[in-house]
Structures are given as C-alpha cells and as structure tokens.
Length: 134
Length: 134
DNA sequence: CTGTCTGCAAATGGTTTGCACCATA
DNA sequence: TATGGTGCAAACCATTTGCAGACAG
Image 1 (cartoon, rainbow over the protein chains, first blue to last red):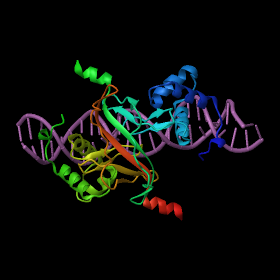
Image 2 (cartoon, each protein chain N blue to C red; image 1 turned 45 degrees about the vertical axis):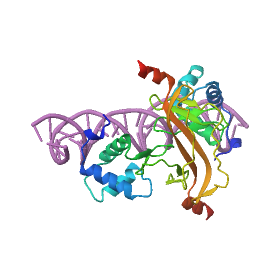
Image 3 (cartoon, rainbow over the protein chains, first blue to last red; image 1 turned 60 degrees about the horizontal axis):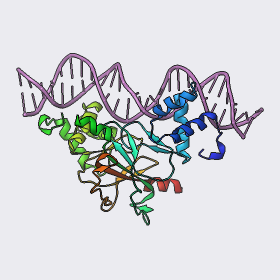
Image 4 (cartoon, each protein chain N blue to C red; image 1 turned 180 degrees about the vertical axis):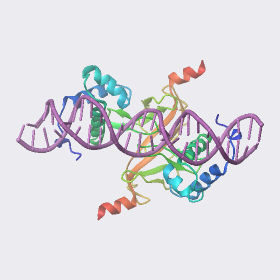
C-alpha cells in the first residue's frame, strides 16, 4: 500500500534520502549505495532499492528511468527536464525553466487518461566532449 | 561498425522489419519474435534482438526505451511522441503533430552537445481505464 | 506486541554473447 | 570463399524477492 502513514521512519530510509538530497548529481542505486555505506557499512543493496522504490512511489523523490541504462534517482521534487549523456550515462538537470507543455484539455487523449509527461534531452556531456577532442 | 553497406540483407532481417512495419502497435522484442516465428519457426530470439538493435543503430527503426519495462520498437521513422500506459506497458503514438520544441541555439546547453530529445506522455490506456471502472 | 523493515543471498528476467555452422555478396 | 549472420544455450547484470531475525510505533 502506498501511504506514507503506513510506513516507518527507519534510520536506513532517513540516511538514503538525506544522502540523495545532498547530491547535485543523479546517482544510480549502486552509486548511492556506495555513498550510504560510508555511514552505514552494514546496509544492503536490496534495502537501498526497496527504499528508493518506495520513496519514488510516495512522490518524495523521482526515479529517472528513461533510456536503457540503470535507473537514476533525483531528490528534487519540482518538475524539471533532464539532459542525459549518451556516452557515459551521466544525467544532469536541464538549465532554465522546464519547457511549457500545455497539457490542459488533454486528460482524455486518444482514449488515454494522461497523467503527465517526461521530457529528456540527450547529447554528449562536457567531459565526454573533451575526451573526444583529444 | 554502423554502416548499412557493410551489412547483408538476410531473410531474417527482412522479415523482422517487414512484420514490425505491419504493426500499428509498438511490440517488445519477445512480442515481435512470436509474430516473426509464424513465418520463420526456426528463428531465435537472439537474432531478433541483434537485428532490432542493428536496425535502430542504422536509424531504420526506433527503439523506445523509456521506462523500466521491456524496450519496444517502432517501425516509423519520422519523429513523433509516445503515450505509455503505466498499468500494462502498452505504447501508442501520441495523436496529432509532435509538440514543437525549439531546440535551436541549444546545441551547446550547459556544456552539453545536445543531439535530440524524447518526449513521452504517461497515463492509463483505454482498456485499463475500463478495467478499473468495473 | 504487531507488523514493517532489514540483511543476506538466491532468484528473476530482459538482453547479450560465445561458439560452431550457415549463407550472402 | 571470405566474412557477416544465425541458432542455440549459457552468461550477464540490474533489480526483485523469500526468509528469519530486528526494530519502530
């Protein structure tokens, strides 16, 4: 059941959320696991996955699962677009305000009940651009 | 190497592309495999994957890998947005023209070399809406 | 106390890959 | 006939899950 009142506030959950929010980057589950483990050496990767999934279901964090690579997680709540590097998989926030997509009146679109959208730009990140230039 | 002149025109590849283009839906690799097997019972799933990957690298088809579910493939070449059902994973083309995203002047955006974008709407498809209503 | 959560490890499942044979150009 | 492609099956690997003990409320 997805209801924040039914869930306990475990130390693992707190640390996972805290460390995710400290990061400007959008780590993978494994990446965040490595970071969290510095504070909680005994935590398991399964717990990290379970909490990231739960927090994203609750709308507390955002799971970025465009593309074929591993999912990445974003501790920011407000909607914003993303920019993904096709070479290394890195994900950054798109600069500036999100593109305005007028979804008004589209709640029933082709028989679909539209809930939202995701917009992702893809390209080559600065580091990979430099690597290519060499 | 990704160069159409270096690739042979095998019967398997022809049939895979042909069947994909017949479909209005956007099948998964396994779904297309089931269809292709009606014409080529001995074809393997690995061959379907290899050809879909190659064709999408060549730009002949489009691999839709938003979301966490299985990848889906689209035989249509022109850009269009997609509409994905969050319940059953079904993917349809978004009706009407694609939203105009003025990417001009954004080739160097936050240090990124922007190559393109993908826009996906998510919601509940007609069939799943009906299922819920019962 | 009760039911959720955790650590651990094994299972899952879509996708990829090694290999020996086949077939296209 | 040289080389890319295929069928088969095993390998991969991110993610999920079963379980018994731990802990929050």
